[in-house]
Image (tube, rainbow, N blue to C red; front, top):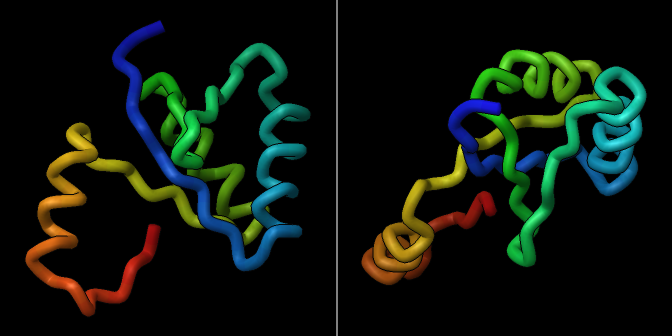
Length: 86
């Protein structure tokens, strides 16, 4: 497995977010997306095209997380009224 990336899977609602998980496990049972405590997933970079395809099938969006979570916290502190998408 190559480089790992951190991603968020955002569904239209909880039903579709769960549908992504079910569909991913059905299509790629050998590829486990590892969830962390913050709700992000760790995946091999070479899987991203497949992740985005399954996300589109289940009305979800794939968002790449920053490599340094402290940077996001710092940016959020600079723009306190920013519409949070995470």
